[in-house]
Length: 244
Length: 203
Image (tube, rainbow over the protein chains, first blue to last red):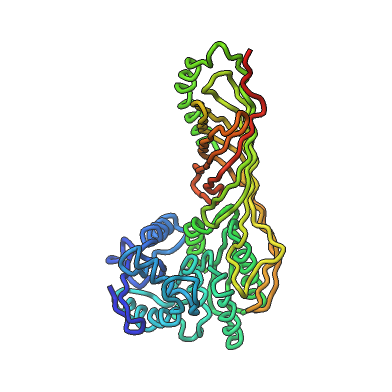
């Protein structure tokens, strides 16, 4: 459990350390996952299996939750959405800025004090649906102070607030000439038209910026709908972003 | 694919006792039996990740001359997502988001006076077609998109019909997929009308 003075709420942290953590020397990459109450066990399996298969290094994995599935389902609407909208959700929206500041200024320093995290090995953020939206939002924040340099946005809710995430992308491009990060993003081919077209548009825009230091890989997953695209995407995404 | 065929075989096998029971309960001898072919037309609503509206055509050919009987089924189902994730500032133009599902299968029909129940196991292809143009006024772009996927359609179907006239039946029907990903072939249900194309004739 961790209290955030920025958000004014408590978060439940789910942590998975490498099995040899106590005996190992040196630090590990950090991977942060969203929707922790719902997704932690599946995400942890991917991380553990990935290390076992040799597709990714051992990592310190932390999933951010809210204490219960119900709380997670409600509060993700607040924390993962960049803009406040009326009528789309019954709950509060538009809290992504505070949630990002909580991660940057409160959570990451706390994790670095508790665990042996090696920042030179990268910090990864990954999320699905609204979680993908927040992952993109975090990606487009000011680079110098951004704690993350690996991103896996999956089945991103591009439709949210008429595609307001594109404004974040545009704002980043106006203030940066480079993007030192590795990004892996996917969309299931069975998603609707707004998602499919927005996914292609975002990919084209990012590639069009020609950031010299950006490693960017996008994949349309054939025969995947919205719900089932997370597992395969995290698996492939972690293998991509953690193996430069 | 092997596991699906195995499931299909087991379900068919499971119907056999009922089939044998059905053969015992014969139509009364004074009736010369001619089991009717039937044409079903229905309006359905369904979906796993989006809401779809559509229609279903189904043709049934009885495989035996008993009141309760096996029947071969050939169907074409289509349904449409009419709105998608469109918002005021971001909408679709000339868009199609539909499923076209040709299928065939076996059904078992139980007939009780005016009521007819049918359990079926359809197998087919769910063709997902999504295309159109996304117009995003807020950001200021238009982008065409197009995607077609061929997916497995497999599951269990059920219908309950009531005979309102000698050749006409009305009722409800439903389909539940037996697939890992329901986005492949979402569950749906609806109301339908059935025309009995031939009928019992008395000698």
